[in-house]
Image 1 (cartoon, rainbow, N blue to C red):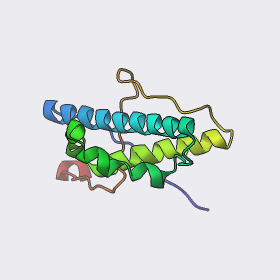
Image 2: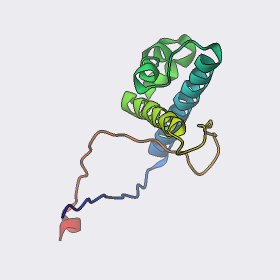
Image 3: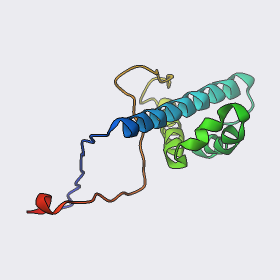
Length: 130
């Protein structure tokens, strides 16, 4: 029998870390919304470009080089790519009939989040082990 185990950590960031996390979440939300508007525009213009992860992630380097969006380069690229994967999955779920059409993410709300998909290590203190 295969057991899958996950871990849930509650972070207690200081002020600087909380601001950085909020900035990362804002960058991911912006990229998701911009990708969604790009996909809607492609559909309306009937260009034939589908909102696949390949097409969406190809937009990120251009957006990061845009003088108006240089602040996107402050965020880890893996977080932004994960937002594009989420958007691509939302479109796949919509076209397969599992969910409704993807909607824009709002700035204010309880779902202000980002994911960092690469592995990480947690430093343990000696008093936590014993």
